[in-house]
Length: 105
Image 1 (cartoon, helix red, strand yellow):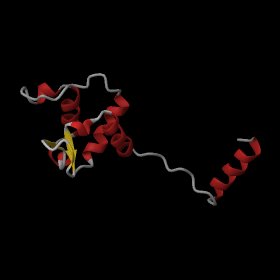
Image 2: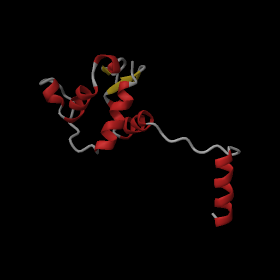
Image 3: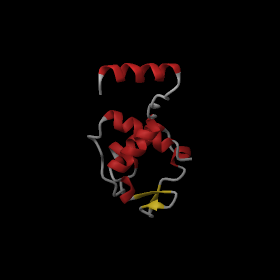
């Protein structure tokens, strides 16, 4: 992109003629993390995904810290779970994923 075009585009955004790209929310990014980590292979949301382990309403049932434990160390939450732990999920991804899951009410 040429420098003059960048300046003009920037000015148009500032004065509101061209809308700026809205920043992605944590929950939106968390939805992407959910997809990237292939969570839907086991978990469903609104009937889409693994039917045995629905996450509908998880945002009402669990607090953020409990969701974190389920993801990082699931055996601490339920010793008989078959869920694999995700101890190496980057913290930003973890926080965004939790934000997304908390929207599931």
